[in-house]
Image 1 (cartoon, one colour):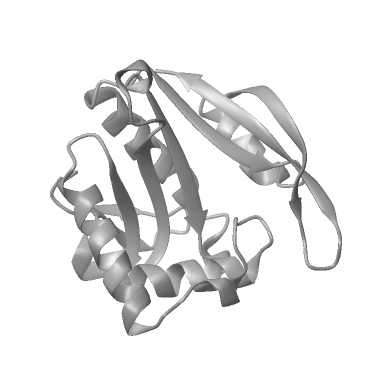
Image 2: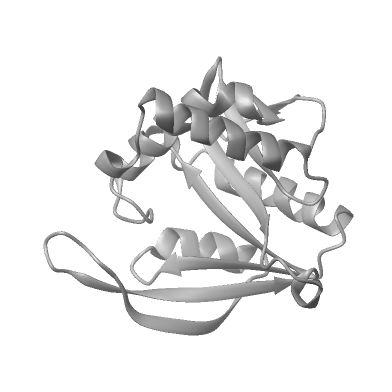
Length: 185
């Protein structure tokens, strides 16, 4: 996925940049994922599970390269200066022809930027990209206690279609359901 970087403005009037990311952003992206995974339990991993070794960065560079060069998949980030502060990934829902009409998305924004409208902006870009890539359905998973994210997804036209009980078990033993949602594009 590629498009020219664009300037955007947050709700508070902060000027930011939105752009697709590729292998040159691997280390920045891993740093971003570690931070957002430390800030909240809503992510699929804990912060200490996001590796920052040379091997981890090499693996991430390869993954980012594949996504960047794929016309139907990719990652879009919002930058404050050179720092990734928000990201959304659009990926194929499956590998075969039977699922080429479906994509999945994953969204994260750094905690200190919550409430700035960045999730909405990232979703708008992802939906636009998914439509142009020929997808007919967009899917995602959200934890049942992540009320703000559920509100965003509903606002963007997603509807709940299922729930996996106790999909996440936190280190303290808390069990949280995952809600699956979709949007017809």
